[in-house]
Image 1 (tube, rainbow, N blue to C red):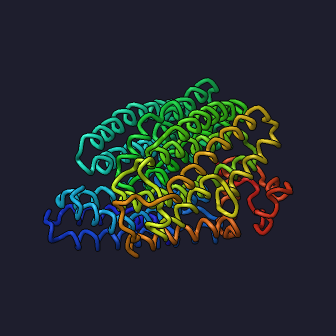
Image 2: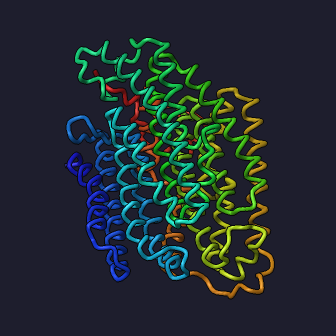
Image 3: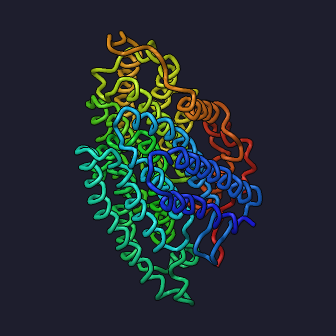
Length: 525
């Protein structure tokens, strides 16, 4: 039944988008758009979690349309992010967009377009996460660009339109390198596999990776890293990200940072697995280490210098996606587990903060941190949540990112990457200072005279509170089904035993309650 659920899961946002597209574009139909949108994101949440529960509970993968789409323990992590963050940002979007219409920032005719492309955005990300067809992976990532350029440019003003065009040009050009890598892998696989028609399927290719031409695989991995790394926001392909994240509506920014970047990293991880199987792990780890530490260092310096709240958060995204790459570079079960955990923890944290930036924008009418102060007094609930969000982003306990970062640092110590770790710690210190500055300057301080006290409505606060509770929950006592999924996914990536997760004292507590059943999760021929 899980295979059929995958089809339904992908169809729900697509059908919702089609229905919204068919409806007339009238201001009086905005409540209908909102209702369809709300049903859509809640349904995706429920279906994604039910599908994940079936895979994690059984320990088996689910397939749909033959081998075109598969849900394994690795993709479960990212489908879960799409479902949960898509629902939270989607529900937050309803009061946010309603407020934008009321203050004249968005034309009523744009509301239909917004909800239409929001649904298509979720659909394309689900296809990317679930694809087992290597060409479909690339098509889906490219399709996310087509759906999101309209969301980034939703306000139809010069800065947002410029950001949308920059996003479209940079990502379309960059992701083309992913196609080059895909073609190289396909051509090599077609010449080796007993049945060349199977060369489009990742699961069919992987068992034969050790017979591939090493130079071809190395080039393909570099191309895939450049191509999908562009969409992930890795340095130096990140140039679109600060503009797109800052100019998009805040719930879209949360979805871009919280989910889209992680889906792009999933595809890099798929090629990382192939490269490790064909070449050994030395070269893939080196590529990830270099691009990861450069992303972290560059972004940390940029974060500190930004006065635009959303732009500061955008550079945080570049830094943290660099951390994911860095942890992949450390390698081993601990490094891989840390990278996967960080995808989850950062996705939750950043979607939370981008939604809160929307609260601030609704109240203060600006993203300029020089003009934002006294949020705690002006908006008590938002002020408390904003302080929590920046503490979480800084990696402080008891929030979720502390867990993934300490696991990754442990992996770096075990791998002996002392110079890289030193640069990483310095960068984290700069980021902590930047986060502390926002809290002291924006959250506390005097409320500007023109700002009336009063928080945003309950409809906007509820999804933010849910995200805050989740961050605390994952930081204090991460749910065991999620940890088991991470461990099993680690086995898929390493293609080996994950017993090291149970042998390292620092992280033994984290994984002590999982059954350690993942002994490799190798794909059988």
